[in-house]
Length: 568
Image (cartoon, rainbow, N blue to C red; front, side, top):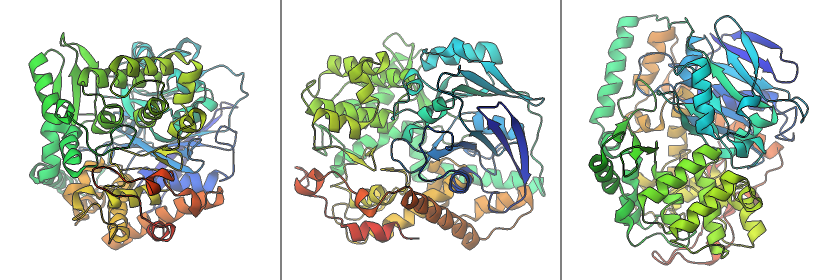
């Protein structure tokens, strides 16, 4: 059984619906994509009254299972024009569970000149509070104001000033365990969708009294300990505990897929200055508020996040992740962690996706607006975004639009969404995933890199990508952190047993995978209905024409091959 709270943003009416379904038992992306498919017309304007925004947690949210409180947010994307799910850590998922909610739906839209509202959800009622006090402010100031008013333990979601202007590369900032809205569902422009409904913040109060019930609580406790053991024993997830996602810098540099100079290259000279060891040593040396290990949610046995301090030991940015190190670091030929952390902080405060805006700045540098490697110029371009200048608005619209406006052919995106931090000509498995994700280029959708015997060859990559699309989608369906996949990729029963001990519902691995595959079919059908065709699932033509210098590879995946990877 699960509950949906429906909130009409035009009439301020709310209602709660209760359902009982094995399909929705899984929650997360499985739920958000089904809701979008059923209730959002595929051809609608993403900023119009017919689009909806769904916030969904997972079946194990609110329990003591490690890494089980991810929040999936779904709707129609203004960036890709198709279906979108973006997820984040933080405390919002658990606050929803404590209010007895599996899903919150923002529906309809008021007139464009309506005032900003804060939606406040508590155990007694849902209120619409005047939000004009937050208008135009950065995310960090909004976080402080929300914490002051509603308490540091409230689960808050807010948007930056770029989203208020309906710019396409904007995300949703969710509260971390310290009450700071720093955990981003960054991709796809969903921040602008929330802004189109004139909701500037969503607050779930820390007064929920719904506690999980168990069919077999003793067995559930044993099962949760097993998950922790699996995470600690796995060599990949345990590596993330010490170094976080920044460990990927050295891996990608060695494989020649570290995006460099607007994805022209796959290797950057001086990459060791921005790798995991350099970050670890810097944080340790500076001390103060810095932390090499940090949890974005509780409980979490991985703790892959970090707190990066400035030279005085004061918080500069948390977290600094690999994807940002690459898109705002090596992609711009920047070799200074302080600069990357500064760019990250400005992006977080402005409310934009670090991947898409990092890629857009790379495009701007290729267009001659700044030199690659120029730290001051890179910061100045991010300040343009923060200040909402005309150029800043272009960059905050994503790399596809920036490339068109600035006259750059080599635009690193698929379906309008920037390519993540793996140069696709050097890793054909990741390239296949980018070309088959219904969400636009997305690394979490099917992460193949660690399992590619010959990354530069496309041989066998349709099957490999589909294998990991299924594995990644399992985690999204459960509301689990994607890094849990390394511990249960070949055996989902430890998680499915927890569902059984919690709800008394038996779901076999085959039944579970059938639900996940149906979700994939639903997502692709939505995109087809929205007018996205096979011809849209392509890289820019330059990736097919020009070889990556370090590998000598061009993109050679055909439309027919990528179509096979999208067929479920």
